[in-house]
Image (cartoon, rainbow, N blue to C red; front, side, top):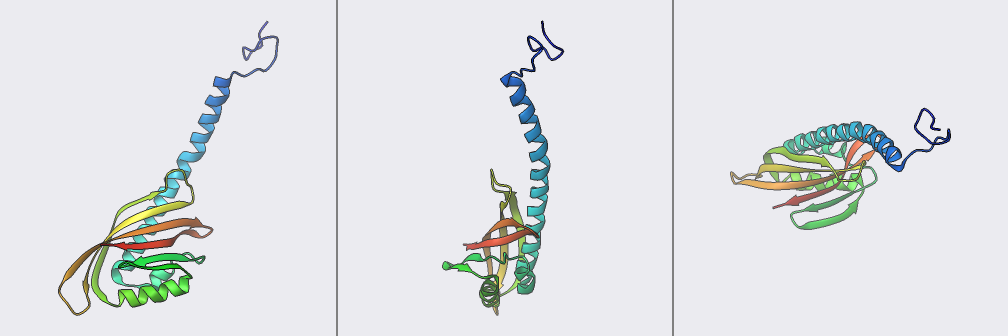
Amino acid sequence: MKDRFGAPNGGHQWSLARVLTLVGLGVAMLVAPVTASAQNGIESAAQSFAGAWGSGSVDRLSSLLSPSGIRLQLDGASHGSLSARQASAVLRDFLGGYEGGVATVSRAAPVDGSRDRGFAEIRWTSRLAGTSQELNRNLFVGMKFEEDGWRVDELRLLR
């Protein structure tokens, strides 16, 4: 005799296929909105960072840095792990040598398999201060999700 669930002898036996199907559906329902939300948050944070970088606004950049520290690599010089305050000082000195900048996000995404890590690739066009020579650079921006949103914890300027 089978019960209304199709289990023999009135028991509630579930086949492995049924269990895996239900678990898969549950995970898909939970992950899809988080991934879409994370994607939107990363893109928004990347756009804010690019706008601040392009305009040379160190104050705005500083508000986007992780308070737990940032790794910087600018023009080959690696600055290791710095506090947000130290990173702001390095960025102020560095960006002071450039003018007329424009930065655009070419890609922003969560790191595969992670809910709290993301990255952005930003294209930066600027001039050395006092010259008309245009420079094109790429920025790699590593981000992590903290309690108040996405924060930058890694920045690499690539040629």
